[in-house]
Image (cartoon, rainbow, N blue to C red; front, side):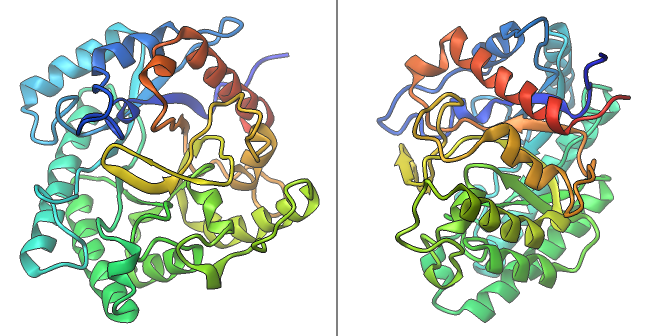
Length: 346
């Protein structure tokens, strides 16, 4: 039987930076992550590409066209493509989406730089699909001081960013992670996206981060599962996932495969966010292949085909884990299992 070849399978490079440095473990170089991604192989199947965070020292958002040509050539030499990009919209180079006029202008400028990178990589033929990821760059606590007013400001900033992105032919995806104000619960996310009212914005679902919307860590009133939830109740968990995905799936234009153990975690400069577990972690609460279907299929079970690649996001694993061949082979195996159940052929 012919294997599915879509969605394409990507690895992420930003886990080499997120939670690293600042007195924590050293940053893992872009070249090391590229080499390990290209080397992973399961039953003759390899990763198809990488998603990139536009951060120093990996790939700066203000990379020159010559820099990007070298990047494209390097990635192509490993028989990989580039997909989605993460815009570095946080202070000090960026600013909070609900901040001052100057802060919001810096936010939009970082989106513009990221969209320029995306457009150049498309023209170089190395980036056939993907989005530019954003968030609000502010905390749930600061947002909660004025929920209506701050949501309005975030939506205004996102609209301006969308208009800039449209000039470059790019779409923006708001990250479903509980540490971002105005995006910290599933209801807040729907409210924010609805207020933006632009055709080129959507939602980035992450099986680990977005899973925590069920538990309401930063918005107890929006939790779907009870505080004393019995993790052995698989039927109730599936019902919760159906409720969550029915609300957010229509917005979803980018997707991360991941595992979660139901707790929050922080390391380095990145705090109070979802715990990405290894694909084989016995404490993981998700059946990765099965539960991905809540996002990849509609309520009638039909494939949405809303995105042409999926990515593994494995932030905050120790360097000793991230430099093991077995880690990436296990991750690739999980990705393959998702595509086997919910992929298609072209």
